[in-house]
Length: 282
Ligand SMILES: O=P(O)(O)O[C@@H]1[C@@H](O)[C@H](OP(=O)(O)O)[C@@H](OP(=O)(O)O)[C@@H](O)[C@H]1OP(=O)(O)O
Ligand SMILES: Nc1ncnc2c1ncn2[C@@H]1O[C@H](COP(=O)(O)OP(=O)(O)O)[C@@H](O)[C@H]1O
Ligand SMILES: [Mg+2]
Ligand SMILES: [Mg+2]
Image 1 (cartoon, rainbow, N blue to C red):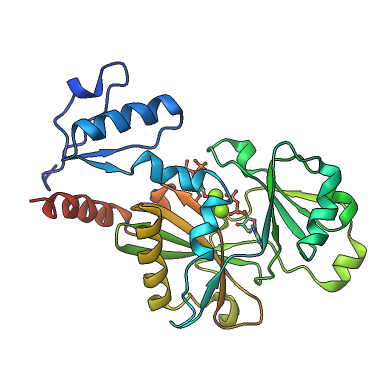
Image 2: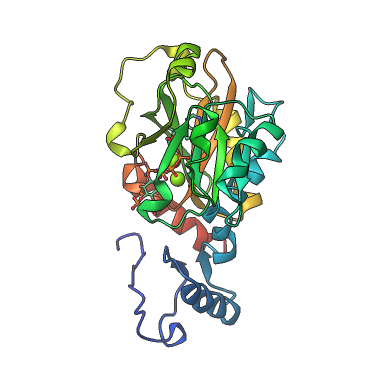
């Protein structure tokens, strides 16, 4: 309040046009009906900042379109390389019996991480597993995306983005998969939310070759390019460093409007961001 910011809850049982006036509408609601309400409001009130436009958020609700923009970036000239693991979409009407053939045709190497194609905030959209051998691919349930597993020393960088501000935290992740394991282990390995907030590695004593943050200029360029391409202000990026390299990175996941309570100094960052939106308009 003392910064001149007043949060007013939107009454979902009343027409948006009868509420307000608003400078900014901040939302994270799923579903077509809400999207239509916001789009209609946006056309009638172009002066109001919608955080963020529903059609932009849509990019991140599918694990193929989510990473498309990263794959198209060319960041190799600034302090490192950023790519996405090779991935293959298995559509809803594909039969699991075709997956081994499609994987071989695409030249993908096991193990593969299988992820539900749709990301909708449900627990189901976070039910991931690792396939160690071809036979286990037959047990998968399309639609899904298969991503080559990249060894990354069991550590992941979660990069929070609020407008132009970036904050990096370390989270524990899946351990490397060794060649011997590949030979001995078979089947599907279903795993829980390994890199959630409780898995913070910020205070852990880790090998600096694994734990050193990605170079700041690289992250700034990646964040700027993704903000522009995605048309979003609020998201976080899950990034891993390929084990054994200094500056080869992969983006494996992008989340819209994550739990910012886990971002260091988020209160001040969010206040400054909201004020900047209004300041830039006058
Ligand atoms: O998908 P991740 O990488 O686990 O990130 C989650 C995710 O963004 C999750 O949102 P949803 O997909 O469940 O809607 C966030 O939940 P909340 O928005 O309820 O907090 C988690 O906070 C994200 O985890 P993190 O904050 O560690 O990125
Ligand atoms: N291609 C990959 N290589 C290695 N580990 C991965 C890969 N993809 C995901 N993981 C591991 O699985 C976890 C969850 O994957 P992610 O794509 O972030 O799904 P979610 O949206 O449920 O967080 C990551 O935090 C990481 O530990
Ligand atoms: Mg993730
Ligand atoms: Mg995610």
